Length: 482
Image (tube, rainbow, N blue to C red; front, top):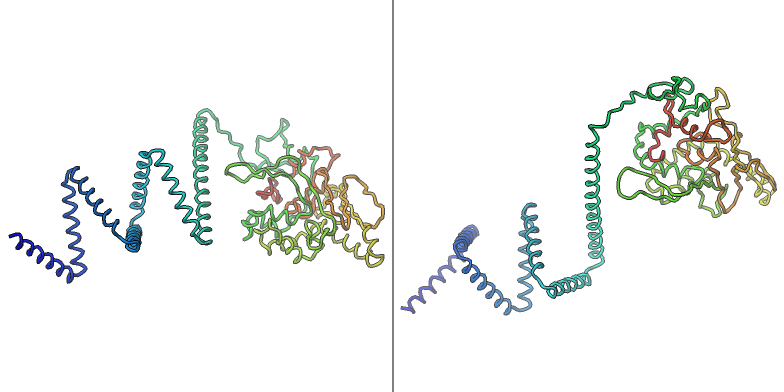
């Protein structure tokens, strides 16, 4: 009886094998699906004890198989497992992936919560060892990719922390502001359309003094500054009508520094956190300008660039790292405009011409005595009643040859053919503004001058006032206005 049953079982196994050999892929999938469903139904009906027993048997059989496999079989099995896992993960949806990662994190957290201190140290040591082995095998490209990913992850973590802090601060701000709404009365200044009869400054209606007149803009007529006509080509860049205006305004500080006649030195202290652009400095601001020629050929900067031709000057400016975001064509265009309208550019060219003339007529030693003084006592443009053109070269500079020339005023700017040290410009010198902010004052309009009947504050309030039909580039300066 037992022999017949054994033979019957063998025949059944053979028939099953023969059927599976000839079955199609569709039949195979259907059979496996049916078997999986039967297995799932059986597992759903088993008790906790039966389930633990089944899993224990499976683990035992798996362990026995793995103990017997060769190194090649083990590598093949791990490779097949990795391939199947990769295929499964490639097919999963975003939701399934997030669920899998969440489950893995949960299981890992539960395992770590149960492990002893010794087990935790052992796990960390194993992880460190595996990481070290992986890094020892990686190529330069893999290493760079790993380090780049680490930097990116660290940046994202910092941004998340900052965004969380900013969100909390913003919410606190809005909560505090909302609480004030019921107790704050709205104030409306009206339109800024009230005209000062002395200088044409525009005001809000409530800015009148007790006598019913506006005095903030011109100190009751004591400051009447007739500005030069701003170049049309530069106006489009300032007011947004030029196609390069956005680029220009984003890089306006770089353009101004590259094209100015002097340097501004200060300790820049950027504010922490994120927010609106803010140019913040600490301590004193220094202004210096260069002499006619640099100490080393090819290192021209600031005013020295205006004695070169426009193409070469533009190349020198674009070679500097801080101007890397600037447009070379736009840089040259503004350079040509300034050469055309700016008296300081003319003054440096005039000094170069005199130096070359003396060099040709009297030799090198005599040419070293050529000196230029940029005067701080030039006639203010507003003193030319009815005149709106820019100051000319004779009003701002004196160029002459002298072996012992003394500047007529201690605040005058003294320029020599060659000097290693830059020439210091006093902040009280009226040429400081036009030499520093050449994009605001391309025609060389001077700044505040001492010994006037008004204060420096009153002068700059006048200069910053809004006026109808008069273009004020300072009000369009954006980052440069700070």
